Image 1 (cartoon, rainbow over the protein chains, first blue to last red):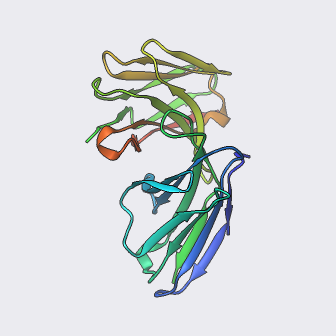
Image 2: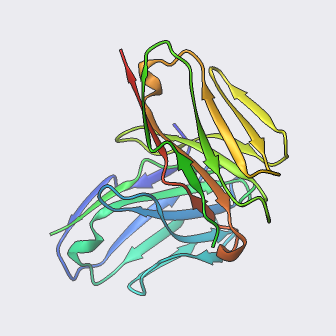
Image 3: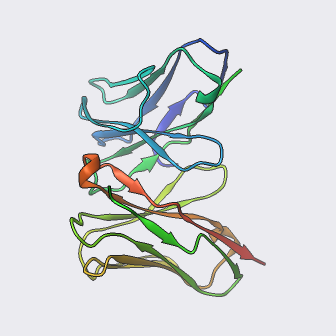
Amino acid sequence: DSGVTQTPKHLITATGQRVTLRCSPRSGDLSVYWYQQSLDQGLQFLIQYYNGEERAKGNILERFSAQQFPDLHSELNLSSLELGDSALYFCASSRTGWGTEAFFGQGTRLTVV
Amino acid sequence: ILNVEQSPQSLHVQEGDSTNFTCSFPSSNFYALHWYRWETAKSPEALFVMTLNGDEKKKGRISATLNTKEGYSYLYIKGSQPEDSATYLCALPGVDSNYQLIWGAGTKLIIKP
């Protein structure tokens, strides 16, 4: 158990809908990262938050947004969903940033039908 | 953009044998190197974060070395066991990516009983 909690574990929704994925980082970790893993692909970095502020953006679509709340949990919002958004979405947290190891949650499997 | 290369792409090893594989990176602008193990149907698990040239780290039967001057890190597994079967990823923070981790494609290790 990495200490990072993601909910829900599985999500099935229709095209055009909007969903919210939730991540609770390890206690004391200030950074939260969101990654997307599409079928047989590697990890695609989406976005990072550090202590409530957006720190870096990767290849995140404009239909996607995220935020980190004062209690440091984070939410990833995916809207106007398309079939191609079906993927495993990982959240990871680390104590600070790139110099500290990242701990990954178990992921949310999103299926868009 | 930082280019992180891992070799070999895949590796079949007999149970009980020792093995090693490589992560290569540009030697300039080095900040840190991360190693992760990613088992099928699970989430990536941090193994090591290495920052200094000549660093050697060990966790059980797994160890890693770092040569920042020549731009490579080796991961060693001693006495491979079936539970070592996984994809091993290395990642480095990239200056051009606002220090986000740039991931190698991984080495897929399969241990044959």
